[in-house]
Image (cartoon, rainbow, N blue to C red):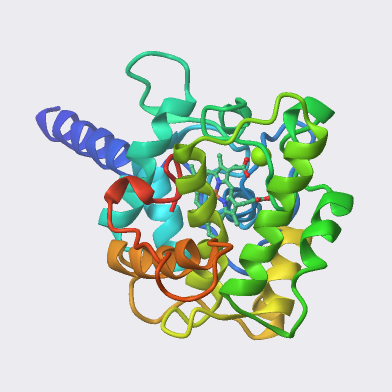
Length: 265
Ligand code: HEM
Ligand SMILES: [Mg+2]
C-alpha cells in the first residue's frame, strides 16, 4: 500500500514535470486540424505542426515551450524561458500558466500591423498566412541569399504600405523591437548568424508551408542558440532599418527587451 502510494506520488510528480503531449519530430509534420489553434507566428505554428509544441495549439506552458523550442530548434532553455515570460501576457487571464496560439492573435498585444506575411487586423484576418501580402514583401528579397538589407527593405515596405492604407496603423517603439526580432529570426534559425545572411529558399519554404525546411537540407543548429546570438543578429537588423547612408546613424540593440516573442526575439 505504502509503496503504491509512493509510486503514485512519484508518477504524478513526473507527469507534472514533463510536457503533456507526445514527442515531436521532423517527419511527423502535418497541418492543423479543424479544432486546432494556430496564430500569427509562423514558427509557433510550425513547431505545433511537427508536434514539438502541442498540436492543438493549446496549453503552451513554460515547460512545453522550453521543450518545444529546444527539441525543434536547439534554443537554449534560458532563452526559451525568457521568450515564454515575455509572451505570457498574451493570455488575458491573470496569473496565467499557459497561453494558446489563438491568444497570440490579440491585436496590439504581441500581434502588430505591417507583418511580413499577414494582413493588418483592420483589413480582416491578422493571423493566417496571406500569400498576397507575403508576395509584396518578397519583392525585396532579390537574391538567393538574403541579407539584412533585403530583409529590412521588405519590412520597411510593409510599414509604408500599412501606414498609407490602414487608418488604424499602429507601430510603436515597442512594436519596432518585436518587428526587428521577427526579421532577425529566420537568420537565427535557418541562416548564418555571423554573416547575417540566410538562404531565401529556406525562408520562403518555411513561411509558405509552416514546416521546417529539412527536405531542402536544413538541420537545427549544432550549438544551442542563446540570448547573445539573438542580440547580435537583432543588432544587424536594427542597423539595417535606417534609411540614412553611412555610419553616423547606426544604433545597436543591447537591451533584453528587444527580444522577439513578446518582445519576441
Ligand atoms: C515563445 C516563442 C514565440 C512567441 C510567443 C512568438 C510570437 C509571435 C507573434 C505574436 C507574432 C506576430 C507578430 C506580427 O504581428 O507579425 C510572431 C511573428 C513572427 N515570429 Fe514568432 N514567436 C515565438 C518564437 C519565434 C521563433 C523561435 C521564431 C523563429 C523563426 C519566430 C519567428 C517569427 C517570425 C518570422 C514572425 C513574423 C511573421 C510576419 O511578419 O509575418 N517566432 N511571433
Ligand atoms: Mg501582424
